[in-house]
Image (cartoon, rainbow, N blue to C red; front, side):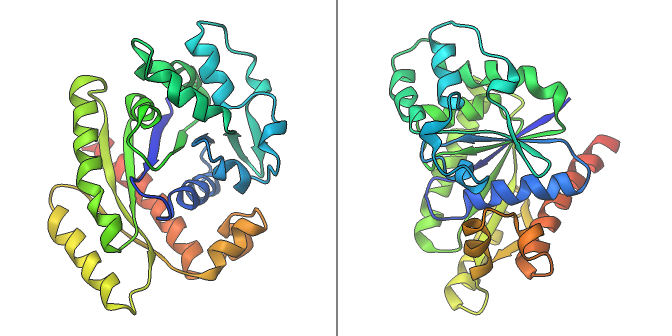
Length: 266
């Protein structure tokens, strides 16, 4: 049965979507069947997959959520699951922003995404969900269905401030809605270890959470190759396979799988 992993952050610009995109391809390169889910109304992950006009897509995750809210049946999988270079994905659009507002007025609305993704577990090894950088109704929906959460943190002071709030929300969801929810770990992104601030924040994260929350050994370096790969709609494994950032994402994927395999054999 597939494992649902949420890639989350409370602040934009910390490499959340880029990490979702490249993790999906890293896992696929290891022979895993992967579904990426764009659960952000900005639809940046959808753009990464090469979709230029999200309004032209007839069925996105926003449309599926609307159908759920109206108690209507979902369409056939081929109507909303797209594929690119060995990775399947469910696209998004601004329709999802309307869903966000509607969710706040619905009873039991925190399980709407679960109704969409749970039936897909048997088809995939991993379902990777990219969420919006806010602790609203959409993020709560994603946390309600996820098995694990990867928190992306840019080693800057402002990115650190929302980390504790996000962890508190995760614990509340675990206690009240989704008891299986676990924090997979903290992924440090956009790291430039040549700067003192990056070194200091990285040390602070390690000191604050070591022993309680895993800090992934893989550090995602800051490099122009990331922006270039997104511009050309190619994962780093294809665009720049020999670079440090490409190897870092591959190592991150291995860490994620290895920890799970080790836990299963204990």
